Structures are given as structure tokens and as C-alpha cells.
Amino acid sequence: MRLGVIDVGSNTVHLLIFDARPGAHPMPASSFKHELRLAEHLTAEGDISAEGTETLASFAVQCLDHAADMGATTVLGFATSAIRDAGNTEAVLRRVREESGVDLQVLSGEQEARLTFLAARRWCGWSSGHLMMVDIGGGSLELAAGRDEEPDAAVSLPLGAGRLSSRLPGEVADPDDVRSLRRYVRASIGEVVPDLLIREPHKVVGTSKTMRSLARLQGAAPSGDGPFVRRTLQRDALKDWVDRLAAMPVSQRASLPGVNQGRARQILAGALVAEGAMDLLGIEELEICPWALREGVLLQFLDHLDTKGLLEIS
Image 1 (spheres, rainbow, N blue to C red):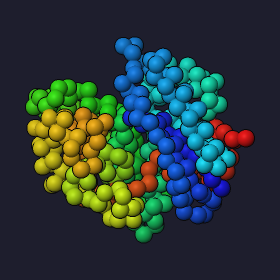
Image 2 (image 1 turned 120 degrees about the vertical axis):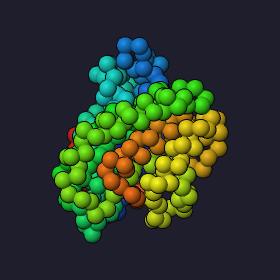
Image 3 (image 1 turned 30 degrees about the horizontal axis):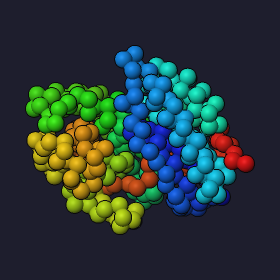
């Protein structure tokens, strides 16, 4: 069957079309996305603005048109922290549903962590043993660990790269702001370390665009080389890159491998989160996992085939 998954994140709204069936490896067939940056459409009251809501609803219509053109018969839609944390969540969901017919399901932070862990477990397999997963999104950081497909511990913290980038204003980050953000990140992660380190992991993986970009800075293969190339993130090299990014103008960061104009401002905040997680959790090296939340949502749907909130395209 051909399925579509619409992921409404803090940075990007992304439709991914898969060819999939229960028990089989989901194969991506088409990608369609828009860098909406919902976090930048928040009002002073914490609501998503009318412009942001209308843009999201309009792009949801385009997603359905694209899915239909690509032969998808079912579309799953979900939203994460940008909509979850907004003051007008229900109004935004209602507007999207009325205009496009897409019934977005808002995932809790813990659900994000558990579904992303499911995707990482399926990708890595049982031979990876006790698995730990680190996912840095635009709005939140998800951490999970366990031996099974259901993690023993799954937590979500408001430490997304996009969310935290507002604490590092200016073309070049102020050293005092960097120190302050580093302390905040580490204090937040420190609170959940005991839950995640009940057992020492056999394997640690990182997911998300931020993690892939940081690995690319360290010389990892570009995405065009495919998902089966091994890519890693090294803690010692990351520390060096944190210092380099902190001293580098935003405009210069955009010319780095794996960092586009839209991600240039938030890559430093993402690096600080990755560094903090690796330090506090004792991770010397993690492997980049190409599967993340979208794949987790799809895999759960295939496992049960009764997931709510799907839209049949006629």
C-alpha cells in the first residue's frame, strides 16, 4: 500500500510518501515539504498567528493534492511541540480540518519519544541490545532507552534547537548568552539522567536534522549517499564545533556542509543540546539513525492498522 505521513514540526511541515505493508521495510517514494517555522508565527500571547494558521491549512491542502497525485490512498497527520504548546491549539487544528480535511493528531512529548524510539529500534534491530535514543527537534529534545520496542524510559524536554535559538540573538552569539544557555540545557537534562541510565546502553543513536547536520560538520557522508552509510557524531569533535560555531557569524554558518540558510541560526543551540546530552549521559559516540518520528508513526499504524486520525483520499 502507498501511505502518506504529514509531520507538522516546529521548523518544517513535511509530507513523506511510503510504499509499505506490515512486516516489510517502508520505502520512501516521495518527499514534499515547506519550511513554515511555526515557532516564528507565535503572538505575544503564545498563540499561533492567523497568518501561520492559514499557511499551515493551505499547505495541508497541497499535501493532500500531492499525496493523491502520487497514488497514496491513506494519509496520517500529526503535530508536535509547536502546535502542542500553543495557546490556541484547538482553533488551529479545527481550521486545518475545515480547510483541508486533515485531522492532525497532536502527540505528547512522551509519545514523540516512544515513537521515535520504536523507529530507531526497528532500524537498529535486536542485536543493538540496550538502546539509547537522542532526538533534537525544533521545539523539543526527546530521550529514550530500553531493550525492547517499548522503551523503559522516555522523556521530552523543551530544548529544541529552534526554540532555544531565540536565546542567542545577534549575528555572532554573545559569550555570556552561550554560557547561560549551556547551564540551562545541562540543568534540564541533568534532572532526567537517572531515569535514562538505569542500565548502560550497548548502542546510542541520534536522530533528526540537527543531529545529521552536526555529524556532517564532522565529515559524515552527505544525505545523497543514502541511508545505509554509517554516520557518527563524536563528543570530542562536537566540543570543538560548539566553540567554532559560537565564534562564527550566522551568515558564515550557512556555508558549512549540512547547514542551510534556514538552519544556520539554530545550529549552535542544537550543538549545545547535543553536547550537553552526550556529556551528561556519558556518550563518547553516537550513530546517526535515518529513521525517526515519521517512520515511528508509520510503523505503529502498520502494526495495528486501526490508527485513528487517518484520511482516506477518494
